[in-house]
Amino acid sequence: GAVVSQHPSRVICKSGTSVKIECRSLDFQATTMFWYRQFPKQSLMLMATSNEGSKATYEQGVEKDKFLINHASLTLSTLTVTSAHPEDSSFYICSARDDTSTDTQYFGPGTRLTVL
Amino acid sequence: KQEVTQIPAALSVPEGENLVLNCSFTDSAIYNLQWFRQDPGKGLTSLLLIQSSQREQTSGRLNASLDKSSGRSTLYIAASQPGDSATYLCADYSGNTPLVFGKGTRLSVIA
Image (cartoon, rainbow over all chains, first blue to last red; front, side, top):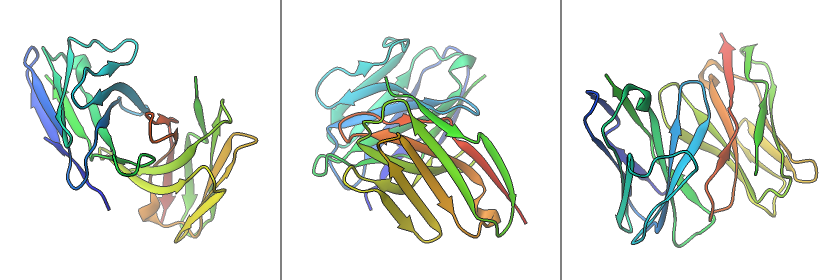
């Protein structure tokens, strides 16, 4: 089946630094990718919709200047957490919609971010 | 706005028992319904996808059904095993839109 990878799988950083998370579709093209965040014992909440070649669409309450999304190619979207703070510590998961099968989305394995 | 509720929030059963997890939606106009498994600290594993024209799907010991008229889905796990212990999430989605997830049911199967 189709595979979506995320890198890194786990990252620990100091408060105030920036962290970039990559989401790649390995064997299909994805014009649209979604970024989710999951806090402990909570469900996944959509942060933003990433579209190749255009600006991302952010959900209400998500700061676009803090969570920078770049979808520069049909197989790669990146989420950069700028000036990270401990409250940004979370599990970040992306999904990618297969362009050839628009009813299908595939999920990445997630990235665990810990901000000290 | 679609909201998804999963009941129970947590469940502990002895090994070998059959069990049912429930998922309900505030908007019964469900397009696709998908069940996932999430192990602690891990990402999502897709279990079953019920597409809009279907009413149920089966994979091994798992059976998921969807009743659009009532906005409910159930995941049936037969002969549970300790390896089934995880959080189970249901989600409603169209391929064009992001998934709306429930908070999940944390399942513990005791050997």
